[in-house]
Amino acid sequence: MAAKLPVTVITGFLGSGKTTLIRHLLQNNQGRRIAVLVNEFGELGIDGELLRSCGYCPEDGDSSSNIVELTNGCLCCTVQEEFLPTMLELLKRRDKLDCILIETSGLALPKPLVKAFRWPEIRNAATVDAVITVVDCEAVAAGTFASDPDAVNVQRQADPNLEHETPLQELFEDQLACADLVVLNKTDLVDATQQAGVVDLIKGELSRAVKIVESNRSQLDASVILGLQAAVEDNLDARPSHHDTEEDHDHDEEITSAHVILNRAFDPQQLQKQLEALVQQQEIYRIKGFVAVPNKAMRLVLQGVGTRFDQFYDRPWQPEENRQTQLVFIGQKLNPAEIESQLAALAG
Image (cartoon, rainbow, N blue to C red; front, side):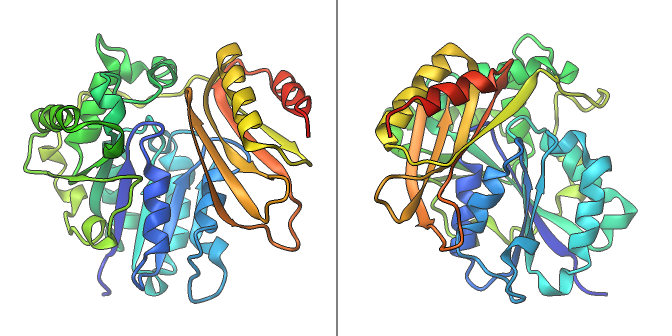
């Protein structure tokens, strides 16, 4: 029997840098044939498209076939509905793959996902090589764990498993407790004293000998992340969780996504200023998407978590592409018509 296909689970709060880490691994795959399973929240599939744009191309020449997007919320809550058939399809191609990366949602508890690798349909073909927990160093230094704690808290309130006195901290602890490696990301945004304090806090939550690696924009060599050979599904008892004895959970239907597609270009600074205003007006937790910029041949990637925004150009527009601006908004009780109206009113 062929060796089990290694699967790396990448977890962490909203905005910690999970997608950026995966994108970097694909761009610097060192010859590895990597499949990516993205837990996407939002109809446009921005994260999946962002990963596709990294330039990775499998042997069969069809880059989209190795990237699977789940669009219905937290992965750990939907494994029986979508995860199993998705994994079975990927495992049919195990002779053409070297590993699988799974990006969980910002609220996912990694342990329930890992338990799925004990299922007979998966156990003999795949193993969890490691759980990688990405931590936003700046946010933890500020005492918030996530760069937008309100976004995490509102989603957390929809989850009966997380109704505790310090729910956000407990979720943070659970993500650390399951980790085989902690990526301390965005270290460039804090000073040495703040970083040392965050490291001490993390070490205090780790029940096992787990390495902590520093990162700036998730720029880590694949050899650091892949090939840890932890066989996590066989070692779950050493990974305590606040939710080990609790029932499965559902998510609040009030947490929604809205997408806006505009056939026009925007000045990046004017657009960001308007988006910052929208965040103040509505309960918007995440913004992500692609922007057409006047007189630019490159596509602009825009991502926002709370009031913090990031922009970069990822690739040239393709000749057959419509140079559209596509944005996904994630939040509570969104008003898509008002969002689109305010963006459309911006000067061209």
